[in-house]
Length: 109
Image 1: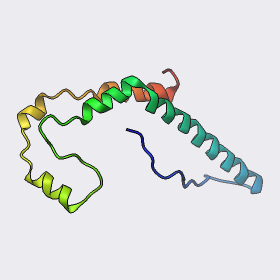
Image 2 (image 1 turned 180 degrees about the horizontal axis):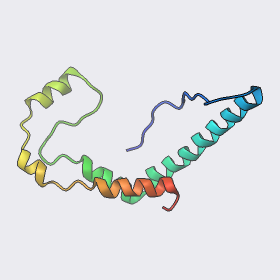
Image 3 (image 1 turned 45 degrees about the horizontal axis):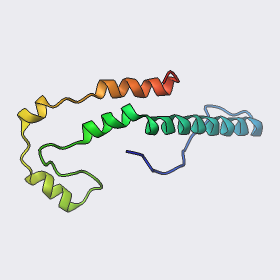
Image 4 (image 1 turned 120 degrees about the horizontal axis):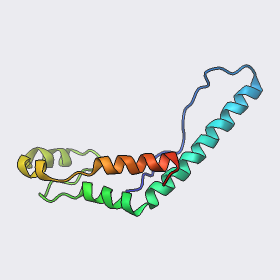
């Protein structure tokens, strides 16, 4: 489940006193971007995280797959009968996924 979105950001310094401050801010932004780029690479490569993502995205009841919005997808969702009891019984390991994500961000995984 790799994200392939835009690779730009918009940031504003709290305060820059001169041109050197602007350049220092830009260097800091780039460093942060590269740190998170590496963290996201690790997140994408982590087998346990990817297994949890797969587990949470599986639809056992034939629920229409979500993607980009389209009228056809909206109609399919509206027409689908959702079994609330089955949904409530389904295991959703989001707490484990959250902790693994924090572990990667904190550098302990």
